Image (cartoon, rainbow, N blue to C red):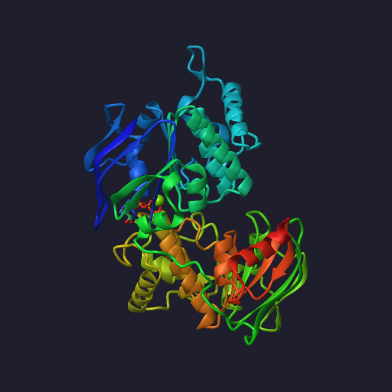
Length: 502
Ligand SMILES: Nc1ncnc2c1ncn2[C@@H]1O[C@H](COP(=O)(O)OP(=O)(O)OP(=O)(O)O)[C@@H](O)[C@H]1O
Ligand SMILES: [Mg+2]
């Protein structure tokens, strides 16, 4: 039994945890949910010794644990799959997995590398990653880095496993493999704590759920006798409406972007579509269906092998990301917000306003006054409900979901006429998700932006788009029109999308 007794933690200006007492039983998957900034990651870090509590104690089977470092917690059989990717970028998969138990030969102290690689390979196979164990970590995708962390926990033979949003970049298949492993570990009596914003996952996988709000424990419930609606209420204290936000005036809008037979070998196959001002065109598909690849050629990040792009009716030659932003007014909100895009050491204000600065001769020039920057920053902080002490707070200190919102707001502030938004609500809580949906919808409705919304979240895309293209295996395989028609039900629309996927 793992037990927290009155744990509190304060950061400058915020009480991240406030007297939290909680019990986690072995053989149970215990979900931890709450709004962005509620204190989930802080709690996980305290259990693993990455942070020290100001007050309160952590007990294991009646013994008080006092960890001074992450290493101490590993020795106690407690391991973490963290939200921020913390694997060492320059090392190999094998070194990462076996970091804390490098196998030595006899008493010589010499590392037995073949044995290390063999042991690492066995763990990699369990998580379904058939990669060479000598691969350098920094060359892996975000999803594969997450899986390496899981393999590392398996190698450590953890008795308590903490997972902080482990599925944020995994494909459906990888999620299924991970859940299989977690159920198996649970049946072997491992204590599992699972932090997630995805309710489907919480209900499908977990036995119990504890809800945090503003650093306090709201309660612990068995998931068997809890509905989604009740859980949302516990989290944010109100209900969320999931109906479509309303009709868009897409037909009357000017055509802003047209793609004709775009090809990038092995990535994009013959993609043709157009998007108008005032329209939200959804790109729906599973992770890996080729939507991001298409976005990358549209913004000049990747080269086209064939096909033509027209912007505002004219043939466009988009050579780089800077080109797409400055000459064509196309903004791209990347799905990899953690890895690209944020200056973590800079204040929130800088990150929000950086895309507003014009570039001259390849150099970013700060032409906007500090006062104006601060005003823009405040508008975004209010509009997206970014939980921060203010525009001057260091971006690194924000919770994961709030960093996500900063990234999104940077492109909203840039005022592009064409916006490509890739998975805008991964890692964002239900309340904030609702706000982001309204904000995107409003950009199209009242400000006439042409928006391409890439999402694997069916309720999300059906809620705000007016037209949806369905992607499968790098192709557009179907189109659903009139998604914003109030006469059409969610069931009807999701069935129509599903038809193209199978
Ligand atoms: N190192 C730090 N310095 C200052 N404040 C911090 C630091 N780490 C976290 N905080 C603050 O503590 C609060 C709780 O953050 P935490 O990361 O635990 O939230 P969370 O529940 O994990 O949120 P999310 O769902 O967005 O990941 C937030 O207000 C955050 O800004
Ligand atoms: Mg977190």
